Length: 279
Image 1 (tube, one colour):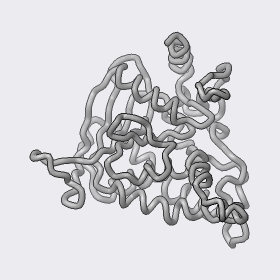
Image 2: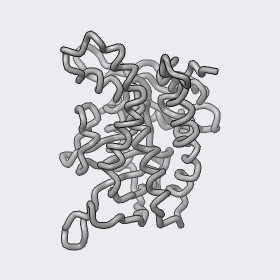
Image 3: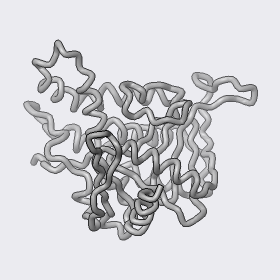
Image 4: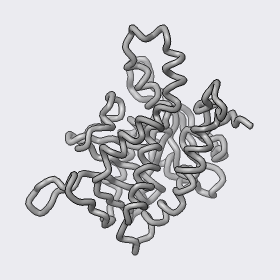
């Protein structure tokens, strides 16, 4: 049976931003004609089952298994690992990764980036004009290619990243979105909207993982400032307590990254956007 409504931001990820584990507060994003951000009325909490779905987004036509991406790849091989990954990241006494845990962790978060409609759109916008006549076929082929080709390339680019978990110690919270993985350059600017920037090894990757924790992947150097890439895997989880100033930086990047929706707790999103209007 083909599942029509497919989650472009998985429930297993969004659940940890929920107030009750069943629903989540969703706020629409709108960009006006001058490309300045404006925000619509706040919505009521929405079921996690409906929070970020698009009909037939991953369904592959004309193959024996049209659900190969949605079910075989995501549900069975990537999303079902997230409970253990999340527990490892937020458990304060877990300080070490083995190589299998590292692989699963990177596979989940990098797929969380490559699977979003915003990244699909970015790829399609960069298809050369001479191939426009077969754009429908390219779009269909990309449903598989983003898993079969893009994800392995991302894993190769970032396999030596150091893992840091930032924990908020005050009343502030992280929000997330329908494009939740932040690719940040050395200039501290968001690179999500720049074609192929996700493959640049020196970019930092930031992902809020719940209202109080944020995961950061960055390139490491030894005590002499020499790159660790291609030399050693640093498998210790670095932990750092942060406050509202860090949360504000991440949340402002998330505002820029989101395509259509922001997600988080009802109380905090209302507070955050009330203050945002005053800035």
